[in-house]
Each structure stands twice: as C-alpha cells, then as structure tokens.
Image 1 (cartoon, rainbow, N blue to C red):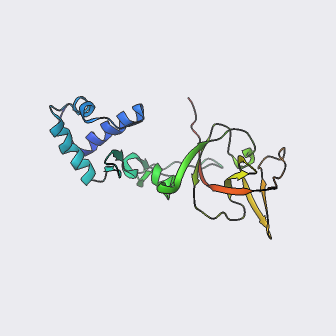
Image 2: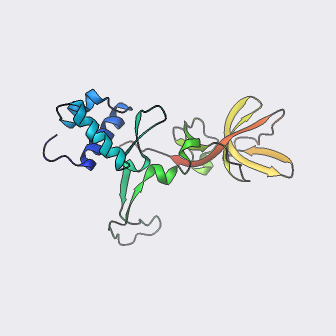
Image 3: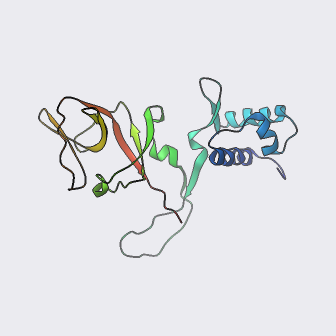
Length: 195
C-alpha cells in the first residue's frame, strides 16, 4: 500500500476485498492487502476501524463491515418528467444499506422469479428486502406461505377475510384454504442494470 495509510484507505481496501470475494479477508491476507509487515500491524488497523465504526465484531468475534461503510455521495436531483437544468452539488453521504434496511437484524434478501408483481415494478431477477416480524397493513406487499407454497403478493384484508393479489391481471386472487403464514413485509426492491 503506497503512501501514507489512512483509516478510510484501509477501510476501502478491506471493503473492495470483501465485495470481490464475498467474505472478509483473514489477518494473513490483510498483511498483503494492506502492504504491512505483520499481523500485529493488521490488528492495529482493525482496532482503529472498529473504533471508527467502520468494522464491527459479531457475537462470535468475527469481523464484518458496519452499515455505513458503503456510503455514496448524494449530489442532487434529476427530473424524470420534462428536462430541466441539472445542478450538481454534494448534499450528503448516503449509505444504501441504511437507506434500504431499517431493521437489519430482522431483514433478508430474496431473488424474484416470475412476473406476478410486474405491475408494481418488481421484475424477475430483482432482489427484494423482506422484513420479518412486521404486521402487514392492507396493501403491503408480503412474502407469505399459502397452503404450503411460498409467494409474494399484495396483502388485502376485508373484514376477517384475507386474500393475496398479484400486480399482474393474468394471475387470480389467492384465497388461503387451510393456512396463511406471513413470512415478512417487502420493504424495498433492488434492480441492477447490466451494461
């Protein structure tokens, strides 16, 4: 690692490794990654990153990035209707993790298959964030187990009757015959465009 090491620079190197390898580097790997001579120097930087809130240790003592470690600059607004002059200025740093996930301990991701929610803008291949333990409100999109099969649909409650509706008119309304278990409420949709 050339030049003077900074906490942010070290954090960026570890974050890049984690994204590429889908895991945190070991201390031995960090020796090479950070360009240092020993694991004790790695430990020094790890303690600094933990103190800065860029890394944390889980209940078993394993390192993981903190939510705010992937912040991007918010530089303005863009018109989705008629064109208008763009004004770009740094307004804030936004962590996509914090923006999309309000309760990380009870949230998880699912990959969407099928087209029953396309009318809501949820397409096959998208990722959805599901929050467990949240009471669904009328009109929420939920993950539900209906009579032994899992689905994602609008939650509709009329009196005591609960039905599940698709956002695609080709699909019928689902009325549970024996059992309905709510697995969670969909709180966000993520779509990655390929270039």
